[in-house]
Image: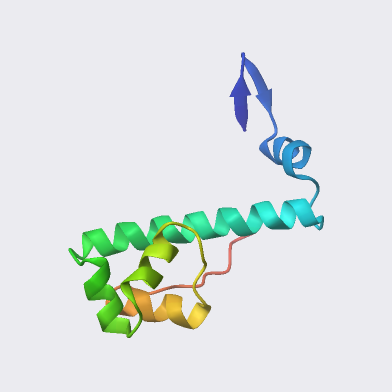
Length: 101
């Protein structure tokens, strides 16, 4: 929910107004950018917590420092395999959990 001038808005309705309904090209673009940003924030936090530089992380997973930098800036989204390699190099694990309905 979003509040604005003491009005409560349904956040999904706000997203639809601004970026279009699910399934539209505009909404898909927004979702991809949001996922890239979210992924970048997870990786930045995990790398800093591990007290590792971008160069050290890049060396551990055999990519360039600029590749890590582009991920962290949200410019690119790593493949699933690369994401798992990064998490492993940072001493983390990824869990996929089915939500309780």
